Image 1 (cartoon, rainbow, N blue to C red):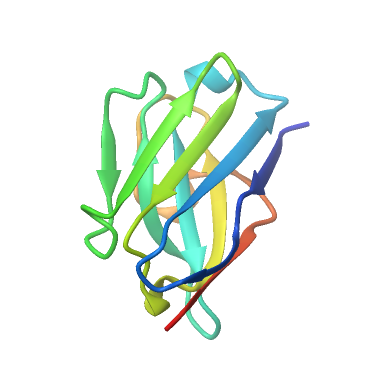
Image 2 (cartoon, one colour):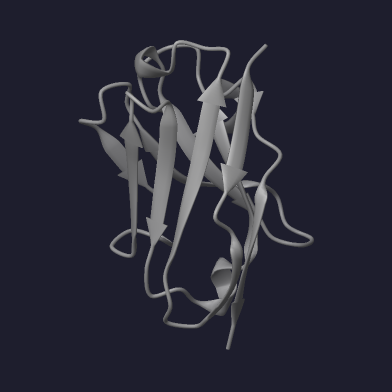
Length: 124
């Protein structure tokens, strides 16, 4: 079965950086689009960024654009999210998600596969 396992979360001061990873198995990783979403306490899960199967197309939420970079290593079946200039409002559980096709999307229903999430806490 499909497994997505996030790692790299933690506690960081405002202005700091983190790199999240998502190790994928049980799917043809190099053929599917991937994404990062996040969910803060009391809020709905929201889109962060997405990347096409080849890595050539990326798209970001306005809230993280210019501060975050999504990338992938298809040889390692791993998705990454580099986050810089972190703000307290970036505090959330971050989830990676996989589509069944290679084209990126921003909406949650487009992603049938989800990881368990990794906590990111940004202190002020």
